[in-house]
Length: 255
Image 1 (cartoon, rainbow, N blue to C red):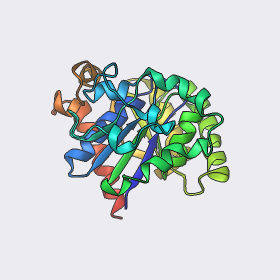
Image 2: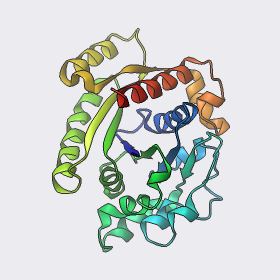
Image 3: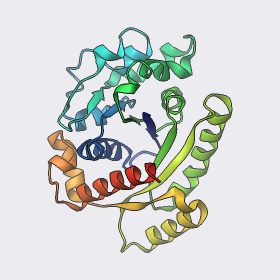
Image 4: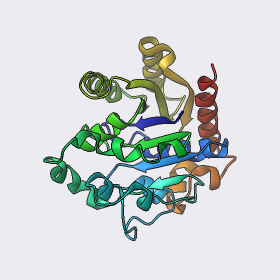
């Protein structure tokens, strides 16, 4: 059965796109068939996968508006070895244009139904906002991964996101659940980071992934080369952390 995972946090700069790209590459390296959907108008996941957002002819924008079939939009075998549904800045106007469309919150879900059986995992990189694009991601997904930095404001925003997920579950997608919270850009020397990490584990228990993504220069460099860190420096701490995250996710599937 295909697992569809929305990767989301309304707070920007928490490693959401970094996680989307590098988890997609790591799951693919583990032998899984993976599709990454870029649902963010910034299109960083598209660029980080080695695709130029300025030259793509069709994107998730046309899919949401019903102007292009998902099969015609999909880019197979990106530089990360997974398949990609790209985005570009046109997506920023999709919210306004989707307002009067039928089933506006389920446009992505309906589109993915045509190809989801071709994949083991579909990862959706949601924008850093609680908007109609994110709602499409949450309605299409079975589960949510929340990347977050271990800082005070992250905890403040987390409660809003959890409440949003509850509302989506109640109104649109009763199968939606929180898969896990992923600690990113973690510096063990930072006392506050340790304290916030402890609070997360206390309140969310086994919903917090054991894997922790460290601050790592190779992770920061890789998007500039248009490849996941696994293909930039596979021995780096960042690459090894995402491989470990993929293993943790796969092991949990077999429990």
